[in-house]
Amino acid sequence: MLLLFVGMQVLAQAQTQQDSTRIAIDSIRNTSAIDLNIKALEEKKRKVDA
Image (cartoon, rainbow, N blue to C red; front, side):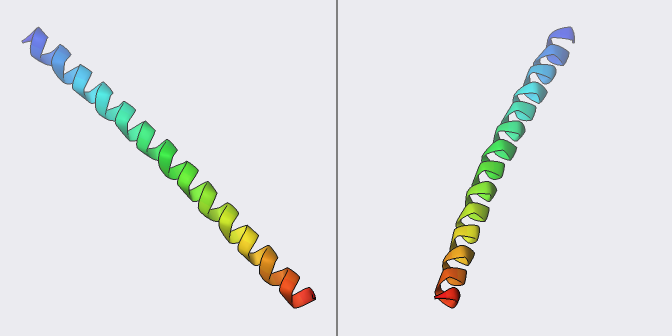
């Protein structure tokens, strides 16, 4: 019974780590998308100002 409990704890920890990694990757993707949007808006502004 103890072994089962330990095994479940290990699986839960692995899932938490996987979720954390996924969140980190999503954050990086979102930041990249925001940077691209800012660059696109700056480019539009330059064209309007020209």
